[in-house]
Amino acid sequence: MIVPAEERGRASAPGAVTLSRKGAARWKNGHPWIFRDDIFPVEFPNGEIVTVRGPAGDELGRAFYGAVSKIALRRLAGPRETVDETLVRARLDAAIDYRERIAPGVTALRLVSSDADGLPGLIVDRYGAHLVLQALTAGIERLLETILDHLTARLSPASILGRNDAAVRRLEGLSEEVRALRGDPPDSVEIEDAGLVFLADLRSGQKTGLFLDQRENRAAAAGYLRGKVLDAFCYDGGFALHAARRAESVEAVDASAGALARAEVNAARNGITNVTTVRANVFDHLSEADRSRRRFDGVVLDPPAFAKSRKDLSAAVRAYKEINLRAMRCLTRGGVLVTCSCSYNLREDEFVEVLAAAAADAGRHAVIVEKRSQARDHPVLLGLPESHYLKCLILRVD
Image 1 (cartoon, rainbow, N blue to C red):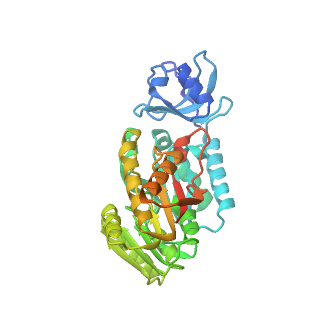
Image 2 (tube, rainbow, N blue to C red):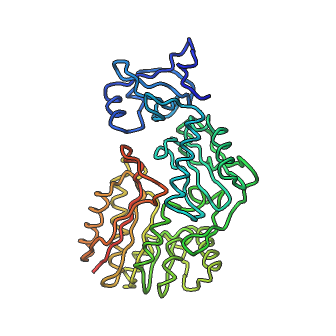
Image 3 (tube, rainbow, N blue to C red):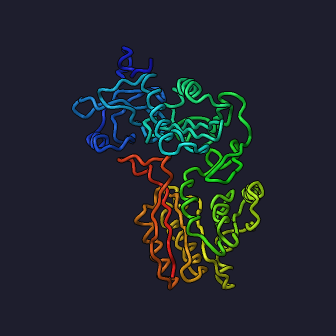
């Protein structure tokens, strides 16, 4: 039974954390993270489940306590909920049930998405018969056996791989590692994505193997892309291969030789012959294409996060503006720009402002055809703006 320390009768530790007025307001407004500056000093083991109280002693709920992280509390439950194995199993079931409703038959998707599914720090992705799990908080690390047992009972996976190599674990006082948690996980597995097959590198690929959050955006973008297409920051060819089924040709550019090798393998597995890979710095490649007056009917920009914190924002804005300006200058009249940002710290309204400035400087007239976000299996939690990180805009550029 998983219960707060206070309910286990620990005489030396009251098991409760008291919030400041600011912290209590944040909690009541729905944000599930409380920072260390907003609690009164306490000492509990890392990952302990504690009772949360307001400044007047009123009980607000239950949370994971982080002894190392700047995020001292991560909301688990309200004041009338008991945190035990039953609650953990119920939340896993609710998360999986939701994915089965919204994406029946999809073989590669996110099954559990941290705070949005009421299990802060837990990521579970499915790749066919295999699961890849990330335990990104000390609290989830403590519940790991309960979680693994229920995933095994519910889904009967061939294996479960722990991709606990994310740098954020260090902020939680946890070690980084990649290890088998159940069964014998393969290094890679072939999955199906909207009629195409991709090889997912489970042990060393980006995130847990693929960018599953772009799954719906890749299919949507392909509906607009025709003629000659440039896919910049192509990684394993996700956008490129979807576009290639209708486009005349696709030029897939990335700085990583390994990513391009996977893109070529994926193209061959699908019998796609109109994709050409180019290893290059995307900034330089776009500048050269602009200078040489090369023109494309469609451009896809899916860069890594340029703003990993607010202090990076000014430099990130300059970088986003430059690549989008160059891309617009390289588009034919009426061409399509699919442009993305996975930087939470650059809000959607700020991203739109960057695109407007890029269009003005490029002397182009651009209109938004679609505003998109991360796939529905990566839900956004109201009250947690950090969970809305991916922006994907489809523009017509005249």
